[in-house]
Structure formats: structure tokens, C-alpha cells
Image (tube, rainbow, N blue to C red; front, side, top):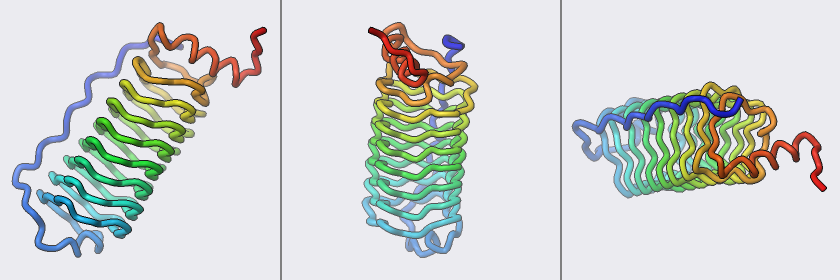
Length: 219
């Protein structure tokens, strides 16, 4: 069914209350807890911080290219102007997290849980969201070309001014999905989408995607 109520607005993450530069990031690699820290312009490319816990913290201009962040827990965390391309966040838990102007090409968020998460002006091309659970997630002005959300669970998710060209939404479980204002050319899985909202200007590209998948040819 197309045309259900729009998801509610996504609350922003609570701002860090006492953010300080950490004396050492060694504990991050040991999977320990960080509370109210600020990481500014640090190169953490390739770091292995699996199972780490970060709360009320902020990363600014930080490089996390190809970082291993499997099963990390992030609560009230902000990332601004960061590089996370190729980072592995498989099975991660993100609650009230914001990514702003971050490059995240090929990021792995498979089987991750994202609750009240916002992406603003981020590049998420080829992102892996397979089997991820998204609850009250919003993207604004992002690029998600060929992102893979196969069998993901989408609850109150809104893509705003986001390029979803050739994105894969096959077998997703939807409880409220708003695609208005986004690019949905060659969207995969369109034929099985239910409980979504699209704009009048998206009817043709959406229909073309459905026709392509169902073998309908227009002469």
C-alpha cells in the first residue's frame, strides 16, 4: 500500500555534557567504555575497537577508514566531518546518533540496530544495511547510490532529498517508510514494498522499477 502517515520527526542526539579530549585512546582498542569525550582530527584508520561503548561523545574530523567497530555501542554520539569509508559496524547498536557531513562509502552496518539516528549530508554509496534494524532513522541530503538494505527492518524511516538510485530494498519489512523528495531511479525491491509514502513526482520512476521487476514491457 502506498500513502501511509509520515513517520514522526527524529529527535536529535542529546549533546555531550562534559566533552574532554581523552588522554589516551588505548581503551578504545580494548573495547572499554568512553564517557563524554571529544575526539578531534585524530587518525584512527584501521583501528580495531570492537565491542567498545561510547556515551555522550563527539568525533570531529576524525579518520576511521576501514576501522573495525563490530558490535560497538554508541549512545548520544555525534560524528561531524568524519571519514568512515569501509568501516565495519556489523551488529553495532546506535541510539540517538548523528552523522553530519561524513564520508561513509561502503560502510558495513549489516545486522546493526539504529534507533533515532540521523544522517545529514553524508555519502553512503554502497553501504551495507543487510538485515539491519532501523527505527526512527532519517537521512537528509545524502547519497545512498547502490546501498544494500536486503531484508532490513524499517520502522518510521524517512529519506529526505536522498539519492537512492539502484538501492536494494528487496524483502525489507516496512512499518512506515517515507521516500518523498528522494531519487528512486532503478530502485530494487520496489515490487514488494508496502506501507510506504511517495510523492506525485515519484510515481513514474517507482512504477518503472515495479514494471522492470515484474516483467512488464511497455511498447
